[in-house]
Length: 235
Image (cartoon, rainbow, N blue to C red):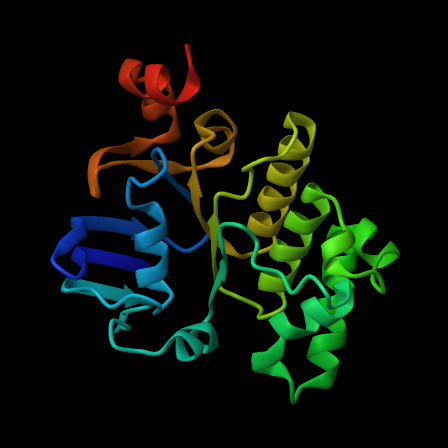
């Protein structure tokens, strides 16, 4: 479904990621592990068209998307839930969600159906649909960010650090919902520092250090790897 082949990305003369190869098959949950600044967000921004690779190719469903604009990539079926949520704090929950469905704005029935789906996944958002997004708790804001991404009906969802700053119980609930979204047919690419939570739900993973992949394997392999456990699981 998604292939990154020998991708490099530069910021000026600085190479942020180099020689990155990633494969995501339809239906999978794939996790990118690594500390802050390891290159995960740069990879996400490159997939979603916000960065252009200086080398290599990004392919989605067999089509090269390197030179496509970010809005075209959303229309192809890739939705990104960014790190830090990037909500519109003064707008209501419902207005934020409708912004996420902007690419389908002419299909009113589809928007209505997507809204109902998000409210089913996150009942608290239905309760607070007329509240300003900025008034929500951190966990509720993360739910809204995920819900807003779902409104574009993505085939592939990029989730950038969804657990940052959240209480362990909320993280658990969040990952249960991510699993549910995946079971409903959305492929998930997840960037996480919380290896413990991420590897429990992922099929496979890639470990990033200094802009390059240093390790890859199934979740079981990575969970059993001593280096991964020491660096990211604390065991």
